Image 1 (cartoon, rainbow, N blue to C red):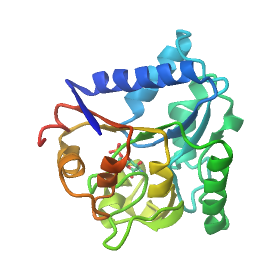
Image 2: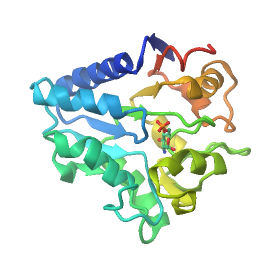
Image 3: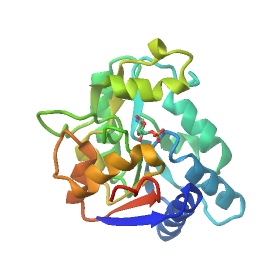
Length: 241
Ligand code: GLP
């Protein structure tokens, strides 16, 4: 694991976007693993700008998002499909047919199984972008006292995650209690992982992930066992290291 500390979130975004640019130029049909949340938004804005400037070509890129809420239609403003369209896909030359977000509708168990199979068929994820939850979750893999969950699965969100994500809904009761998420195995199978964390609120989770033991109580701690992972942090997120 390599840890890079930048002065602010703009510099984190610039560094992340440069990694995307170099990987896509080396492999134009790169398979991206993408994340939602507030943290990657500046990176997506850099990618949009670089695409406009002709520095990144998304025409052959394929993408698989980490997660989606159970029960939200893709056109619900708080759904992760909606987020990805609004924050990135609508503004770059990616073919929407090549973008994938797990479906939280219908038979979600079946969707979960099909999602892993689809990623495998695409050749696996080349570059996985991650954020981190305050409790150390990655994707929607919440702390679990027993084990890391390997496959894409339906998860029950913790009260702290529901509370943290309530800002994107009208009221806390509207936040779905369940989500479908790429599992820890799916994340660890990615050839390269970059985790972004910004702000003081992430400092403890970052510290525990980087310096603590590997434990399913802090899902991001497993990343230490990956051979090609970089944490890109701003000074505040790195303040407890
Ligand atoms: C959600 C997402 C995660 C994300 C986390 C942190 O729970 N499922 O993928 O990393 O929130 O979000 P933020 O970047 O807004 O702090």
